[in-house]
Picture 1 (cartoon, rainbow, N blue to C red):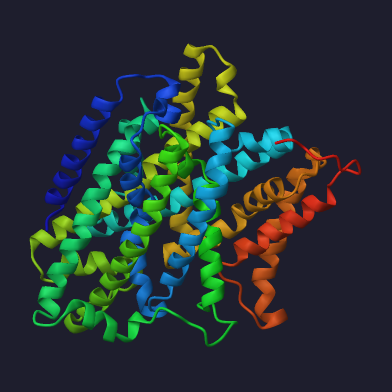
Picture 2: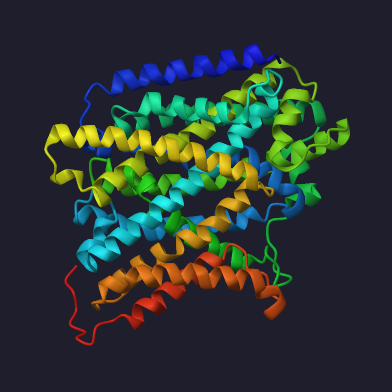
Length: 483
């Protein structure tokens, strides 16, 4: 598979997205950019969110996760379902009742300005880190597969990657993304299905795929043996639940699509079907991981983890078509999450920090466009930084980062929803900073101090520390609030 062919595939793919952007983005106003004029069909949002929820990380990193951790990630995925139930029953009704553009406006009404700005800033940090991890993974694979042979520097690969996102999102934001995500999800799922079929046909042409996966030593899902182990079921399940609550329900990126639906009922239907479908889709990705490792072992392919899929697709001798489908799926998976992340960052910064809704319309649109450019540049430099710090599987790094940055959001929203007390709003930023710092030192020293290694459950602990800190800030006058 030549570099020229890969570049042609990417160019054709983005030409399609730009056409979709043109057709859906004729209105260049903030109402379209932020919430799509609240006219998005729920089933289109639900299908598109599959790709946005999975991203290029799932496409590449989840299959690579199988070697060391078997199907243990499915314990996290099962926890997702309970997390989505909380979003459907608790968070979505709250957001629709308050008619929010940015979900962090809730913190303004519940606690005050400092809590509001703190929540928004922690989302911005969280999403910059998460989106950068995801884009880094894709850019690294493109560099490995294409641009190294052309002597193109990594920074230029990243620049092109981000520029392409900016081109089709800068006008109408979420209104365009709802439709481009649908297209990208279709490409991604088709690529995975075709990849499984082709690898299975080469590896086990006369065997049942389901039986083969079930009999594999890598397909063990449930781990109950050692509660100290990072793969222990209860830890993974609860982590999955809280990861969903914070990385979907308390995340402007994911909720912005739901808030673009026509009604609360439509948004709830969207989340219900998304929860069900994601369980099966992740199971398919884990099964792909088994096939990839077994195929690599049988054919002397030495790559593992995040580069395994690309090595098999491009150098496994399975034909040109598998390489083409791999790249289509990779690009689709990566951009279906990255484009909405850039839009959500722009929305949160404009609404929460710059308060553009108070500006004159022309000034607000101009401000939004400059912010959009600014975050594109921020993502560029963050990805280049991560290149210098790369330590292994990207999906693990994302969840570790989420434990530090989403924890304060979890604590703030939990305190707001489950208590009615007023707090000393000005001191909230201190609590939000101290909690992740405590968690960092606990994670670094927990094995030495307690003989226990923290995993994804660090997110829950961070939220608890934030909640306790807010209890300390409760005003002596404990008269309840009305929000």
